[in-house]
Image (tube, protein in one colour):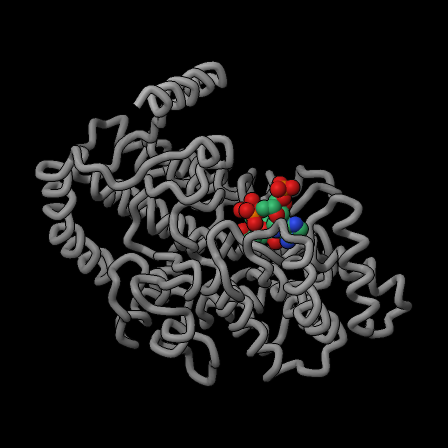
Length: 442
Ligand code: CMX
């Protein structure tokens, strides 16, 4: 066993009695109530999921295992001469709740390197896609094609004990996480840069640096990749991608099925695809302006035009957050340090100055502030990844770290098959009527 898996097992043994006690001693206690608008409105805010990997405070933003993003970026060990930490170290933190030592991360980096062999049939699956397919569709299918490698599935057939589910899930998850950046880079090169050819991983490089190398990008794209994967890793359990991963895995589908499904959920424009939408939308304005940086007045007009035509402003608003997303801020600070004069960054800056007031004036969005997607495409564009259809695939690679950490813990704690109850509109109408009648007769 490697040291992460040993450490994880000791954490699982410590944690299991807490879950058992909650169920045994408090199983019937009421934690939340559900309103009609929550039922019709996408279950917004209902407390019905449990995870210890991350927690999203509406005003503070995400914490991974109790650490804010700036703390995560400061405390996790970094490769030599790097500004951003090892992504492998983030996995250690998400799984165990502990900041790894440099030695612990380095041993995990070696473990990841040993797992980054991608079977040939995956390249064949990718090659079979038409070249105008969306990278998210290809990524989802490529992950799905790896399902035959699942340790969980093969051991389940042999009658594996429930207590061991987590161990096979850990193997599957770590294997998949090590391979995903290679698959992502292959999709990128195949669709947009066939001249790069098929690059093989460089055994001297960690996950972030190897990804940059395979994408054909120079420094500091290694740090951009580390930053990108780390800030996108998790956003507690209720968002579409994290929830989909958990839901699919709850039927004991293995992590390949669950990750492919999570990628499909992330591909929607209200979720992960918003990062490409921001760029597409800003390019529209850039064309209108013949490349000139818009004044605040010109930007206001463009934003109102978009709203008045019934569209949302991509990269703004959030279902939980009620302040500027710290993932936006981390990237903005990176931009201010590395690319303050970037043309698109200036567009995003003007946008930030005008959108919150406009959304407040319009009075619909509960959160007028920017989310992660408002800034992330600009960073990629600056370093030459201008094919914005690819941005959500980058988000997906990062998000897999959180989703898969959650699924390992789901298995370790024996979380149940998800099965909420649905009712009909007529039943809901009758329930509301009965309540009103009872209130009147009291
Ligand atoms: N522009 C225009 N209108 C917006 C808006 C925005 N950025 N954000 C919310 N609204 C509107 C909603 O469409 C909704 O309108 P209707 O009442 O007509 O349906 C109303 O304001 C209330 O919505 P809300 O409760 O504030 O937001 P939701 O929880 O329903 O939705 C989100 C959240 C993110 C889907 C929404 O803010 C949005 O569409 N934003 C733009 C897309 C985006 O950036 N998505 C990425 C989010 C981060 C991520 O997951 O990657």
